[in-house]
Image 1 (cartoon, rainbow, N blue to C red):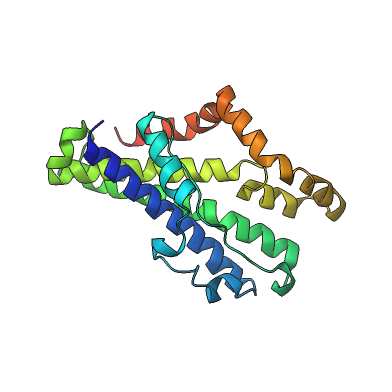
Image 2: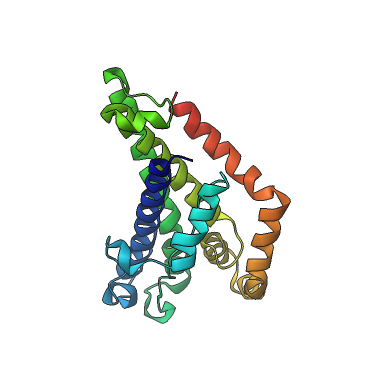
Length: 214
């Protein structure tokens, strides 16, 4: 694989995860809990969010094996007792990360469509040497990686954001029962990955992005 393409994807995953985690921290602050913001986690500085495994090693392995690229950063802490509305606040804090990635993907698609009349197009990795086509490749990976990260985090399996969203929609009793799944969440994710179900979950959104970049 072209080393330039690997570097582009590493940069984009770092950018996507930074946006995602900063959105969590910013939303927590807006909902009444300054914990994450006080720790500097509302920053767009990627260094404060990096997890060596989830932000670097795991995405790099996915790139090498040509699988959908996603990952994770250090969890953004928040104190539910500081929130003005704990259950509603928790739901929106969880939702903020995926929303930020969906909006970033949409912005990449929009910019590509605006540049298309001027010659923007996605060809192959050699396009990275040509400014407008190189930018198109970067925008494509920005859209693909951000939408993959959003879809992955919307899966309602703890500790992913989808579990926080679902817990906020359930009754308190049902949410407490659902929380008991948390210790087994990682095992469920491994099962999804090795069964191929995870790829099927990603496919519709990624197919849409690829169609929009034609």
